Length: 486
Image 1 (cartoon, helix red, strand yellow):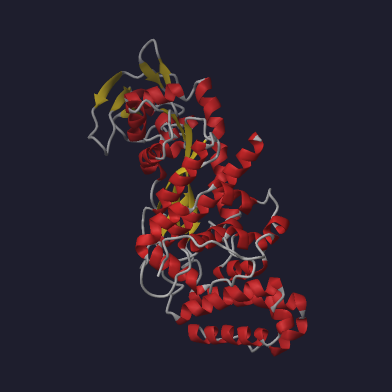
Image 2 (cartoon, rainbow, N blue to C red):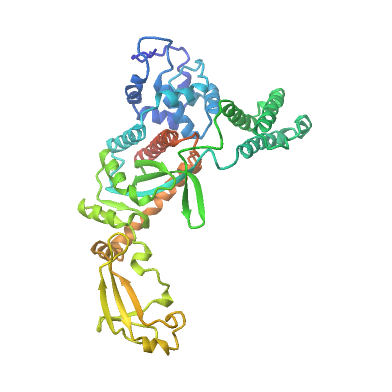
């Protein structure tokens, strides 16, 4: 049962918070900044309002997830810390003497209550709304990019995954008491996952019988992770399968297995929209959706900044139609073609023809219309093949026995020509200097808030993780900008 009225906390110990949670504490500032009743309104339909046991308020459950994102903690560790960290209890609207939830409740909350696929847009929209209300966002510029998140699974075999987690526990234990090594069982030599799982459970049992070691924070944290992993296996959650994850490529020789989050961010470093996809999706295809989602939050946009992935013809046309300035360099293949510098011919503007490396002028040219999407329109320049046969520079340029010699030049579209002219201006170069900001934001999401690896399986799981992580990151940024204004 869920009460639709917020209870009044009459604990005689509430004054403790005024002493131990200072006014400049980040969690206190966020509580004062955000009216979290929007969470209650969004989730109340997922509860029974007049039957069953009293449920933990959805706002408190949501705040637990925010704390996980703020401090990159596991379910067990965020609940454990909320037992003794008064700033956590204050943020959770708990009395100092209140008991905390069972960590398993967070898993149920994510699976049973956060089933709305619009959660990501809602939380980003709410944070942008707060930023606009406090006049934090003044620019009309967004910077777009994507960041990859590795699948929680498939990076290693199930056996390797368990071995890594048990090894982390053992290393932490040895730093406290190396003699415990003698109590641990022999490592399994078979390839059976069940044997590795039994070994992990034995490690857990042995350490739990040594409270002077098990309660050391550095050991306890690793032990909690191992315990969660083994529990997942008991529930038949396979660490070798994530059906939604896909292989994506960061470069020609670097790949990852997982997902992508396509982001738009204001010049003030507030994330204004996001789209979570599988890892193989192309960045450029999501520019228009990111713009539209950002506008839906109430933000005005006149400039979009991105890397070469966003300069495809469709995006250039979209920007022109919507009177947006697109700061995205054309791909070098479009501006320079596929030839290396040493294989390029010079264009003689007076003759209107190309000149080869040996100084021979083309004898004619012909327009080739191409065939739509597969082949772009080109101009074919022909050369005197008899001169090519005896040319001292013919190696690599003329194929022996060929009856003709041609040099093709792809005709750029009007959109590409205009974009190429724009990217050579000082205005373009100055605007492009802001692109580094979103790369720094991607790094913050990954390295400070655990967004480098998915915390659960599936695309929806990452959407929930992305929603709470981005909301937390935006609130931190808003707090910082507000403090700079004071």
